[in-house]
Length: 502
Image (cartoon, rainbow, N blue to C red; front, side):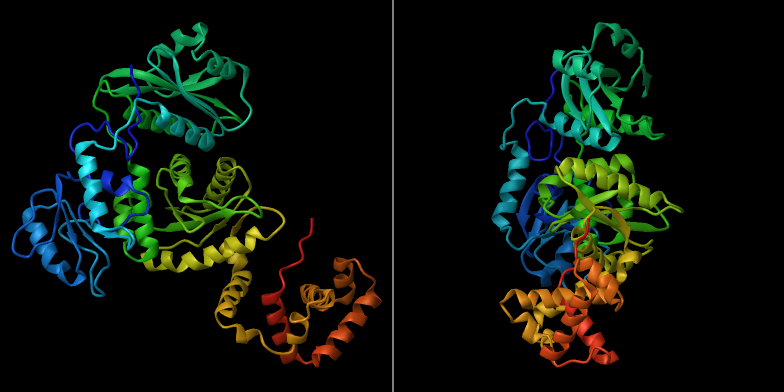
């Protein structure tokens, strides 16, 4: 049995090239504006839009002028073209179309898109037989299931493995010897579905009518109820890397990512996403970002994190925007959404090599409601990243802090908003300026209680009161005046980060 890397962007294509392969082949090149009947459509070529002739059947049509989109859509529908690609959408463009509409990023040239299509059709990008894709799958599964995952061929030879924590002796022996021990091979060979096998769980990898390998999982902290479903999902995905029989490619996470990215950026719809994920009455959006000094999330992390999220919840879609990972998933009553967000935060932390923070939005029923959560969640992750301990928090519990963060962004654009009584302190380059600003911040955090504020700064209460008097004199303010006090507090919170405590 031979394994070959069949990820998007590699050769080894079997059968017709699909539109979904184009969307997932170059991360960030396309967003999906109108999926029509979906992206599972044949792709047979590429052509520039020419009003004087119809495009070919299953051709990708590039439309440089947005004003010509309506005419091009009508022609593409008659010709049964694969999709249209535009640079931007007209203001009055609707979300229904006869064929899918893709929006290309401005930095991606038409020539580059045409070259990519021809490369997919010809298999010109090359690829050597490798189990690299299986390693990515095993590592993602290990993160999602919190344990060790081993993928073997039908002869029980180890092809790939991933470990999320401590590895037990049996799994360690299997990985080091590159082969499943003789004592348990017979038991595994009798398996026809995901089930328990001693200290392992296992699921066969089916390609056609034959079993081409096995997925083995050694639980780290006990088996969740979803273990059989998750293992079957891993085995189905693994089948795509075995080429003795026709096996489908696993572009699912990439397609979901583009649909979610389109929804969040305004070029797609919730209906397009739910067509892929399945119906749900309410949806949640969660945001994850790096905590403190952990390296920021990048698009390179997207594939592994997306697979991990989908294994934790089959209805999840994941996309990276900037340095924040956004996850949309069906909302359920009770603590289920918060539990999912916390489990995913811990898995993503393990994958990123450092702690992450997570913020969970409210239940949403429309695309507009989901988009309205985007910026507050982004600001919320910034608030959480500055706190001493990484955690998962509901957005509702952070609203006041998010408001301050949003106002800080506004002040960056309009620095005059910070002008006033505090100028003498914030423009003082000596240690005194920063010390007095921190004194104000602690006083406001303590609700005006000088004793608590002095304790936070680890100075005597009388010393703290003297500082307040000096601040009033230097800034010519009266902290007993409610309007002045409110203005000074707002400006202080925009200028001075909260005191970090252990």
